[in-house]
Amino acid sequence: MNAPAPQGGSLRDAFPAVVAPEAASQAAAALGIDLHATLDSFCGRVDLYEHVLRGVARESVILPGQVQSFIDRGQRGDAHRALHTFKGLVGTVGWLDLADRAADAEKAVGADQPDAAQCLAALAAALQAGQPHVFALLGVLRPLAREQAAAAAARSQQRSQTAAVESDAPAAPTTR
Image (tube, rainbow, N blue to C red; front, side, top):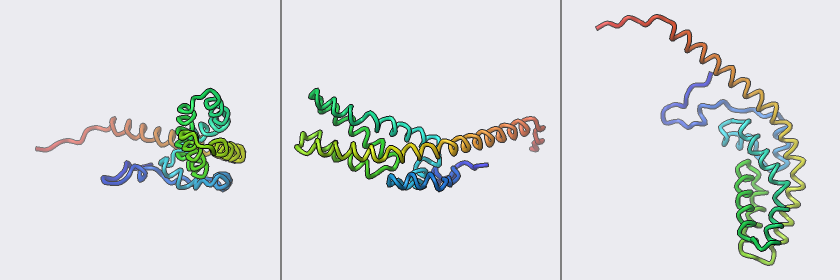
C-alpha cells in the first residue's frame, strides 16, 4: 500500500518506482528516450505515458502532410502552431532529438527561412524512421499499463475494505 506523500516531499515520492521491461527500454532507447527518467516525470503512470505516446504516434502520421498543406495554402501561422504543439508533445514523452528537429522546423517555417523545406524533410524522415520504434514501445507498454491499473484497483479495493472495517468498529470511549 502506498502512503501519501510526506509533508514537504514531492508527489513522486507517493508513487512506486516503475521497472519497465527490457524490451520497452530498448525500444525507447532506439528513439533516444530515457524511459525510466520519462516515466518518473509521469509519476510512474505508465497508462498516462502510453496515452500521450499514442498521441505522438497519431500525430507523427498526420503532421508532415498537415504542415505541408498549411504552407501550400499560405497558412504559415497554422503550420508554425502545429509544429510548436508537436514539439511540446514529443518533448513530453522524452523524444528529445525529434523535439529538436521539430523546433528547427518550427523556427524555419515561422520565419519563412529558405531552409524550411529542408527542415521539414528532416523532420519527416526522423518521424518515418522512428515510427516502428514508437509502435514497438506502445506494444510493450500496453500490458504494463494494464498490470499497473489492476494493481492500483486492488490497492483501492483493499483501502475501501479496510475503511469499511474501521467504520464498523465501535468507537473508542472518550474520557474527560
